[in-house]
Image 1 (cartoon, rainbow, N blue to C red):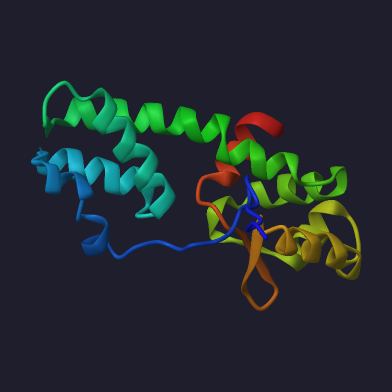
Image 2: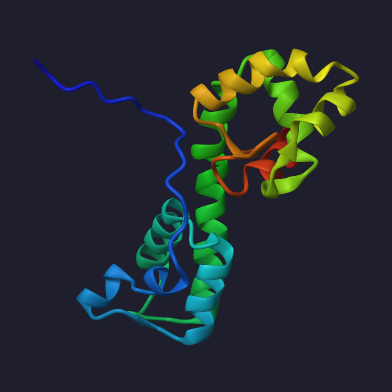
Length: 168
């Protein structure tokens, strides 16, 4: 029997240490970068693995030379963000119900750091207990996770910014 693969699944895979994120697979193929280019990509990605892949792929495909310049890195980040805005972020958004999207909009105000469920309930002018089902469903879908006791955060960095830019 074949293996079932779920596409557009949003799961938290965490961030790499800065040291681990600095090791580019492209180095094995003779590619290099100026330190400012590497710093820009690391900063823009937040060392989040999927973003490093998107930005790295964009750099590999668009840089005219094997030595990545700061301008090449800036272009790669721009292209990578456009890809994320067309793929990963919308796929997470589309999986949320109307009520869950309202919850995500409330969360987006706090950025990627996380939101207190008490604060979210106050913003929504609802009882905290009424937020429980939506919270649980978003956790089950892998769009948010329990960051700490009474706090939820987006599983994907940059999701708050995407929600603010496209769905407020």
